[in-house]
Image (tube, helix red, strand yellow):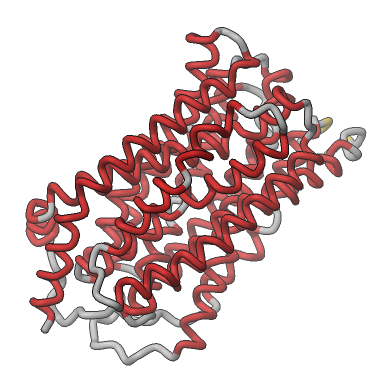
Length: 439
């Protein structure tokens, strides 16, 4: 157990190194999570899968494990060393990604992806809890935005480095590997992207724990946790629904856009990988800039700045959201895709910042774990599966994957926006009340 003594202020240099270390681990997580979306065609061909079966590999197999284990690992983040929780998670997901390279059946690939999800579930509750404790309230959103920009950076690395890893793996197919024997290039790719995890996992131990803010001898128990949930039930429900809708949009795009580029525009991984990488780098930089704007709005007295600014962003980008999958030029599509990046990641940034403002540190990891459970089941679990189901069962044409994506992206963004607008008055009142209690 960690000590419950009052914490001293964390030097900003040390806090930012912690963010940098967590950033690199999150980039690694996205590399291991997302590269599979560039390998849909060879996996389908070798294992004789349909789009819907492949969507189960891309989405629910990972997402359900990620969501379910996020709750107990959020509990662990509130009670044990958050650094060791992260270290163990990285070890598990690196081993599981390596195991994907040994998959020869649909069932074995599903099982390996389940363990990737279990390992990665350890990172975010602990990371957001650490960041919330290491930075003063006026800097939490920008610090969280820098960390969360690793999601877009990781997507960029996955599409960029993943494309080159796939090309390199193709040159190694002739090798008779120890233990494995002959391997397809998609299996070799999984082994290549797993290896960095066995080194980078030690980053989790490269910084000291900042201690827990606002926590004395007493630790809030289950009654206090559920009392907080009941007190803010309407707000938490609306936020979780809104963020789940945005997760559905984002995860559907990251899972199926590579296949869409291949089928609709005839681009191969080495080509679209570089393009999608550039789009995600843009999203990462824009996320940091937006985080600074939100912090500035908050410090100027806008207590619902996180949700209000997010809703403004969705409204401003609605033309790109509607047009993306109806344009015929691949470069115009990529421009729309780049703009949509501005709405597909901030939900976790703003959600974690809102919990840092509303909830005591000792229950923050559990609340994040509970919220992540819902929006990962509905977002990452359902999103890619809905796209695959629409393509196979409604349109019955693989070439219509763009229409499936359009339905999910437009519908998800519209529902998420409506829930955010409904939540705004409740958020303003709740944050103001919390600040009054803290005085």
